[in-house]
Image 1 (cartoon, helix red, strand yellow):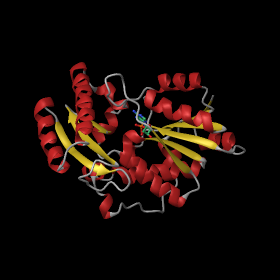
Image 2 (cartoon, protein in one colour):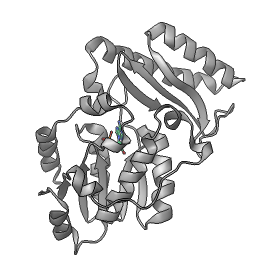
Image 3 (cartoon, protein in one colour):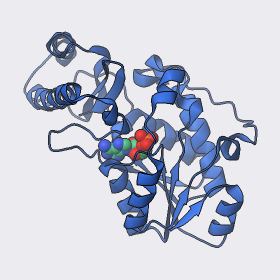
Image 4 (cartoon, helix red, strand yellow):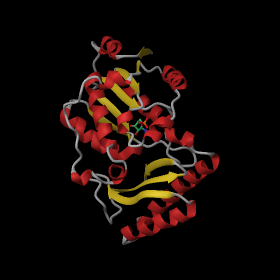
Length: 270
Ligand code: AMP
């Protein structure tokens, strides 16, 4: 595996390669990231993984500072997986060229995390645009765990570049909690709570198949979860998976949640 520490290294390493698979990450790698990487290794000639904690997508400075970083451990994981390249850019490698495209979400996109984390997706699309320009991959592997991010990035990148976004299933631990780099920040009690909440919502979704007036049931569930787990919920909503519109039908729908356990913000969809 080659470590690419700047854009000169990167251009040298990639210039004569085709069918490049790219897995963008913010590090603190877990089995969720690993599933994306394995998929890329399977279908692409070369696989490049980036580790870059992108300051622009954090709407809260404290959150950026406390975001977990484990670079040595990450590099060992990537070596073992036989990844071809790990790209470890500095802020100036990504942001030295001023972006001339002003990213603005459509009004109807201002839902879920876009509503509660102002500027977050503009930051994500900005960095994904810059990374795609620098790397020029054939395929970019992204997780359904961040479903809204996946849809927005897919729409934006596939409109402006030749690269294809490949969606990958959410990986959960044996307690059904979606793996996330932020899980490290949870104490044992909160980790157990988050796992119980995940199980609770998986069961709740199953039950919705036989019910009517689903919007109302979701509102009742939201209040129940707040009391049961003593958490702050940004949103709990049933939305269509194609267009993310609110829906009252379970077909092609997912339950989306964002919540705070103590100070840690977690998101998931079922
Ligand atoms: P992050 O490092 O959190 O920015 O995530 C990098 C990529 O890994 C994104 O495409 C995420 O959607 C994906 N990812 C994160 N957690 C999981 C998971 N539990 N299962 C599948 N993909 C994931």
